[in-house]
Image 1 (cartoon, one colour):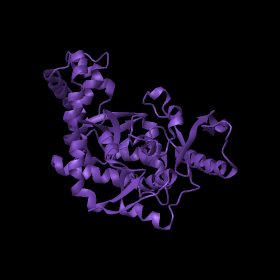
Image 2 (tube, rainbow, N blue to C red; image 1 turned 90 degrees about the vertical axis):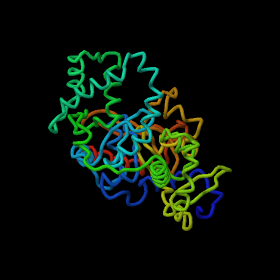
Image 3 (cartoon, rainbow, N blue to C red; image 1 turned 180 degrees about the horizontal axis):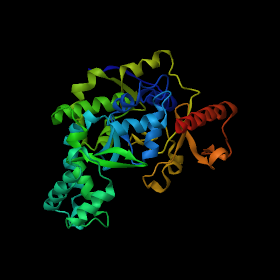
Image 4 (cartoon, rainbow, N blue to C red; image 1 turned 30 degrees about the vertical axis):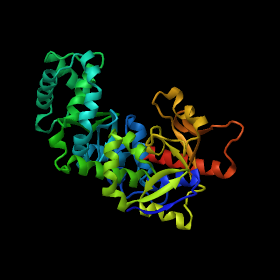
Length: 368
């Protein structure tokens, strides 16, 4: 059984509880790999945003620290869920792919027919790719595409990236060390030498527990969307993990979170004056199917213009998204500038001072 249900929690408090779960309040996480492992999977479609998302959760971390984790394989980047890139702990990638891949590949079957990608084509590309990265070598996307073309496999019109995606989904390849702002591809088994082995039911329960601990308060529907796992299977996993969570009733909806974060309710949840400059695509905003708790629906289009799936950088004050921000100018003239949702209500003195501290932290991150 889950711990006692709590009620009458405001949206702002719910938002601050999520900040606490995600390591965005207090001491954060102890190192880059620990932050990614605690979050389980972090959206990383935009690499530069993902690097800052990790850095925000590790006090004192610099850009070089996060890049080093990708270079040495203590953090990996692949397509485990929703057909988009995420950062994960290396030991978690294979068992998550075992849960999610079949459904994702099924969902792209129509597109692959349009691109004339067959199982024989994938096997041909697998042989070519593994030959190219044999012996621990790393290959760029361009090198892989060139090798595919030489083997008679067209790569234009997104055919090449879909072939690469399929090879990563099947744990043949994984993105490895950085080459500037791109990543090279390496052999999965060579780069990830130790993987956890979880069956489907056990794995779904593990993934559900870790999501709710790292993102809570969150709902089962939030997790089903985030993980691409059918809600019926998610519900079957609840009895296996509910004893390790706290259930919270908010406006008639059941949310779940860790006991450690729920305990903050006893003495008042911190972060009322905390101001953060979140990157685009940050899990605090993106990681839920219903974002209305922290992002007022009337302003959602300002974070995801036109609902196009591209998330802008967000200013968060006291657990609520209050605007966007941008880095304007170059060199010494560069400045991090907030853009409040409501032009008639700019940040007050305290919030503006908090944002300036957040901007200074971002600049220090980029410089180190």
